[in-house]
Image 1 (tube, rainbow, N blue to C red):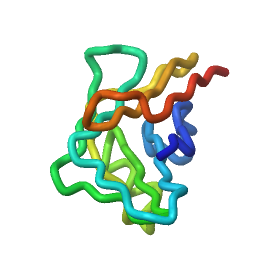
Image 2: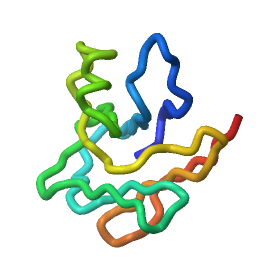
Image 3: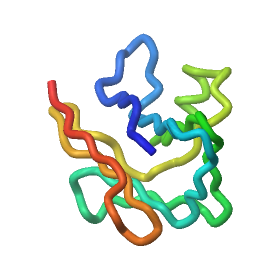
Image 4: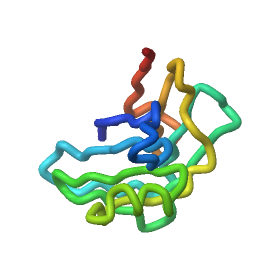
Length: 111
């Protein structure tokens, strides 16, 4: 599982708010039950529900504001959230952990 794409500096013409895309590059599905996603702030956590599966080669978009994201990207059917926190415009660390709290992937971004 990888953090594939990040949207953190919102364009005024397409205000979808913050989002991150996850990708499963494997040739098998991954059970993401109780996995969690976070930014640099250890108080910010988004937990995946029991039964959350990521299909082989699949994508999932974690969004801050589902309504805004759906308005900007009406054909994307793999969005979920609200994750409850946004991403710093000047950059920070995003992290993905499995159900055993082991770091699966992380990415640091900045302007």
